[in-house]
Image: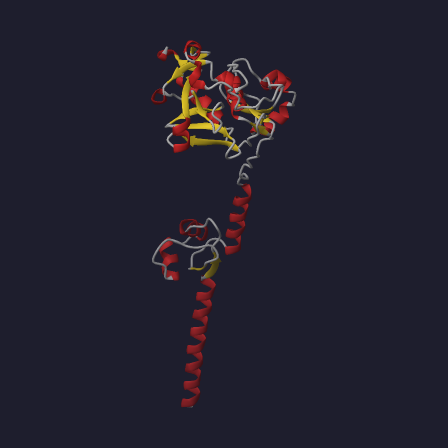
Length: 323
């Protein structure tokens, strides 16, 4: 009799323990952490506090990692698979990251002028409005004055030079030109309407970084130093000569310590009677089509190579306050 009671007692204990474990198992769940999850998001999804989740999982900090399995204590409102489904749905609704397409090699920056519209620009450039919108990631046809657009080359819009002349063409030694050079150097070709226009000019200059260098080239497939300078100033309605030899003789001469953004900088090349030209962008830096590096790049005037070979600076345009 005593043995039967003892057996029944043990059975009840086992049954109680089993029932307790079943209740605990049904009140808890497992959730695998997804990318982007936080304890706050998980706690809201399951209707439990952050502290309860931390206690149930022995967490001391709030940081969790993707693929980490968490025990979700009692009180959850949604199942783990529902949460995962919601997370996936939210992820799917996020707009895809914008794919930046590299512009076509024959594309050139164009600064929107007063009165411009996509229809007129497309006619001048000889390409469709949709092509311009695709190249520039435009979603509307609205344009702003000063906005930079990439367009394909066109005789009407970009005035592409027909002759691809060599860039390092100064056949006279610059120092030997004397008074003739000084007389020509005082002639400016224009004025910046405001500092913002000059800042925009520098931004356009930098869009050419990485364009391949090619002696005699004048397109984005390959360009030399004087063609690069000429093309940039064409965008801002200044028609420079094609060759470095001719560019050397225009504008207003400025000393090295008086250079301002947009000034031309000239250097003596390894061949004594030739010169190289670039555009000063401030902080003793300039952008040029480098025959040494085979691309348009930024260099520093204090680099010994350029410091020793510096010839002069030339101001093509200046601000009203400077005149």
